[in-house]
Length: 230
Image (cartoon, rainbow, N blue to C red; front, side, top):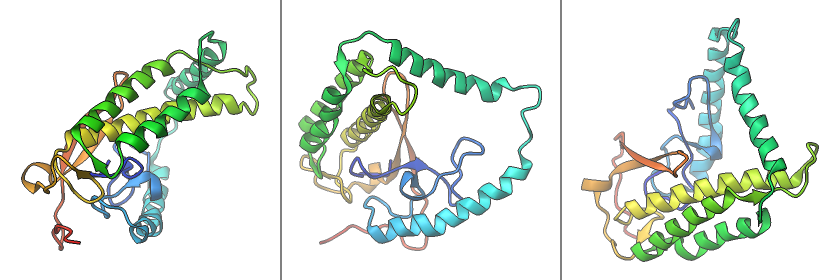
């Protein structure tokens, strides 16, 4: 997630060629974060990431494909993740629990709209983090009504909810840690921009206990970042 971004911004950390930290995985466009838009994404910059970096990612990925060796005698490298996904889906469908996806799904945007808007405070963000952590725990007891493995919309909505909860918590936790105002991130309790401590990218890594935050220095180009004065 980029420094000081609203929770719908940010994306998968990539280099200029769209490569992620996972070898062979490339991302481009709205899902990626190439760092061309700083702390405030604009429509034109989104188009830049889609067209320019999308093409660069496609060319780079195509060049890597011939170098990839077949799994050969190690099919488990491919099959094990697929089995894990199958097991997860089976457990969800067979689970006898009390929570329903509809009730929990409505809580995520509710928390974000109230506590993680453009103007933020320590109290509101702390409340959001607490609420979202509680919601993630509730997700462990969610029940999928339909047991079908074909066109199971309830299952899809449940998996989407898990992703929504993780991403929302990462955004709220990153915003809580960033005690400054920058771009679309305006802290009412820290109204000044703080380049000495916070001129850096926020990275969020998923863990079972919630997001783990890390940071990466900003690569300065020809035009150093300037404070927005309007």
